[in-house]
Length: 72
Image (cartoon, rainbow, N blue to C red; front, side, top):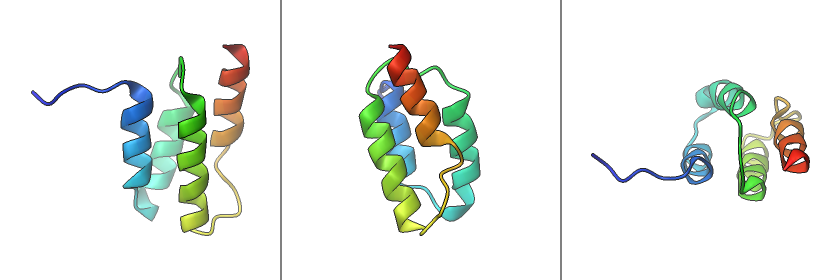
């Protein structure tokens, strides 16, 4: 079995390797997951993805992750 990573590392890898067809699925996954720590790398990777695809919105991901960060 492959070595397991913490969620924030796995999701950042997934975001960095995402295609345009993966964006909505990743957004739904992130918004439905309790993220206990390391919010900033997720936000940074997500913003880079949105810039890469020249998206004008971010599917509510940044707001969701920031809200979880504030709850921490």
